[in-house]
Image (tube, rainbow over all chains, first blue to last red; front, side, top):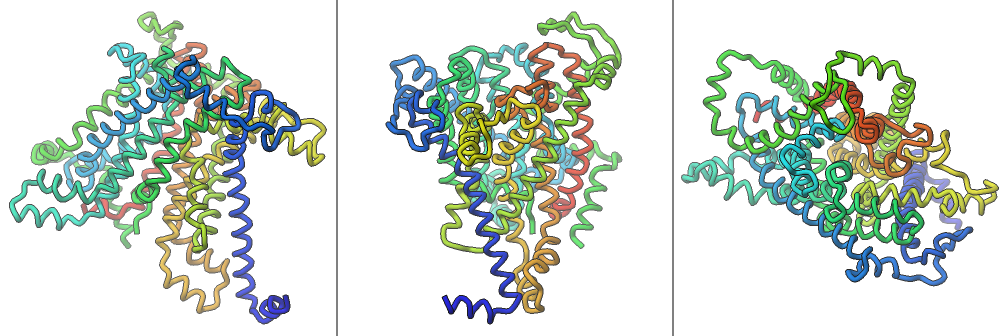
Length: 295
Length: 319
């Protein structure tokens, strides 16, 4: 007790003010942690309540009889709710995976070209790529819907893959370009002096070095496709085609009071992307900032 | 120095000389092979829709997408929009939504980044938790918060009643005056982690020697922040704010799922309003005219976006 008082009195104004900022920082972090985590915790608590327990006032802070019934219902292929949910889950997985693979295949060469070559129109193209990021889905919805109808893709997953691929590309190219900019050109030049063609140098030297960037781009595409709502909502109307965000919305607009089920479904929809993100967050965060922050 | 060169480069690049352009294009024909897949996909899915939207905005369209029966009406769709009261209401909402969300998300994200900059036990875990709202689906986020705000069983209402601050649980999202701020809280919840990530990366580029030198010279924590750290973060701040502003201007899911724009348009923003006009009321022509107006506004914003990015991108010219 006395030592604390002594330190405080001996410390100069400068030291004390530093400590003040530090404390303010800690209190602020605690506040942000609560703001971030409490809604998610409440989602989890609600998801293990019975429908009756969830609609009590005042609410049960912890359910009297915790139950996994909502999860069992959603994951049970025998009943119709489970069938729907599992199908939505599978649809989301399929669309996101195909989108991710195609994004990488298309974005890698484009990003490499933007980083290395100086063909005419390169800068215009690059800004066009960036500008695309600015335009909202709604602008494209009507014409795209008509286009998809014309080429027979309405109510297929192909319409979503094509759309997600296109709208994910600008960001994917931007992210990857940041990585290629940081790979020294000399490495390729050395390979070419040793007799490799430009393509060989690209495949054998550049590709392996840019693996972190490719992983980041892949996670980004996957999460983007997994969470996408507005196109899926517009292009798909058959129940067995829906992806998770739309499927959940359809389902719970019919069962408006099943809050534990809704929270359980929200939780399970979040699990794949959160796990993916937590496992690979190093790449993800680095890629996002690579393009915008250059020293 | 480098930044100035970068800007000059950017200006020069935006006004290319056309002499001998064809010859140059031919010389570089092999390079285009790399970008060709990206260009083809984008031409189909982006350029065509933009053209079609502009065209439709000058037509009166029948419902039900029987678009062969459309008739040319010049600028009538535009005048109809600009003279409607709903337009100004929705524009005002969009302004509050975009500015409010962007500003608060940026400030919270920046402050969190500063607080997380110093190393301490559990920092990595804390950072990971703080980023989760940004990763999960906006649909899930909307449902979580809708449940939290629920007028009968919502937890916030219950806490307010429990603390004696309210007689009965307030109705947050079914109330004209509280709905927009309530939705902004949800939006910030999802977005501040993005600002945080960007600013954390920015903070790593602030040279340590400068901070130490300032400390030796007796600068206070606030002075060090204001005179050393902050000037270094100008570029990344501008980029972050612009990206947030664009994302907010374009947001759809949170208002759409939580309120559908209601009650009485109090939470309609541009995008949800356009969506309702097009797919709810099937007024394709008016919706397209709205989209074109939106497009023009975003182009203006885009001009600043590109300027901020090219000022930031010194390698561009030398590659």
